[in-house]
Length: 352
Image 1: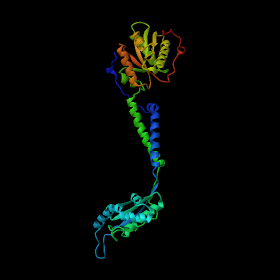
Image 2 (image 1 turned 180 degrees about the horizontal axis):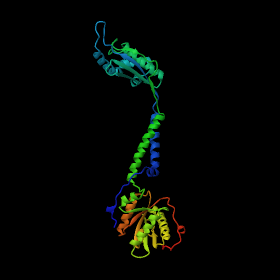
Image 3 (image 1 turned 90 degrees about the horizontal axis):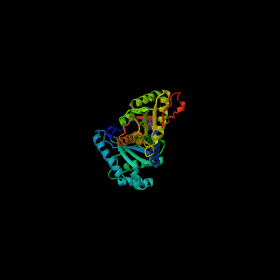
Image 4 (image 1 turned 120 degrees about the vertical axis):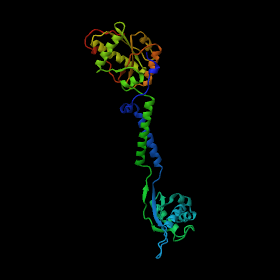
């Protein structure tokens, strides 16, 4: 007898059925994240960076080489000092006609590792102004604008004539990155939802979930259908064998009728006597419980792709009435119902 202790959950995830069921989630997530990424990058203005190069002299003379180590240490100090020096920022602001606060946000200084070289950089949304800013910064550190940088302790080596490169705002790259991220997140959500709402895509999924044998029905499955008829006849106490086909859920009612049609064809083709009684969906009459209690054999009918939880729940409901389900019949969603007229001549099959 079936018990809830026999019921196991979970199924293997297959790519094509997963995409067929959850494609909308992948499309929605990809579109939403892609558009959000494009919107964020679109608000970023295109910018240009120009760079002047300066060096801290080592103090070499014709008689002495100077100290490179001292020059490197002083260069590191200047790199930290220059962006914070108000006198240098004010000198640049006067030269460029900009507020000192705006200049502070756009200048930067980089000390090349293990050297006394400083990269004096200025970033702006206009290429010409970025060049002018880098030149103004080089002039401010060279002309003694700040007492913290005495003359001849930091000498410009190269002044810019054009920006190094531009930093683009929102473009196709931002959209592409958003689409890739959205596709990844959508895939993760699809797998999570598939695990949370596991579906049965073949016999094995239903067997693993319910602990019962499962058989697929279809037009081209005459062999298995005939074997089912013979098995049910062997299990029945009287002739003809009374077989109840109980839908697992509301969507399985039509599947039970189609299964009954296909099995009747198989029975007629071999002259077998069997009484097939498809029950109504849960909550309708004739109920699966009433049909099952008056039958010799009970089979639970479900469709490919139906939730495994629904099958487990229906098995538990039938078990509470003392009804033992012999197996699960899996009907393809597009299974074309067989008709008695298609069967070869033979003895009529009993129906209800």
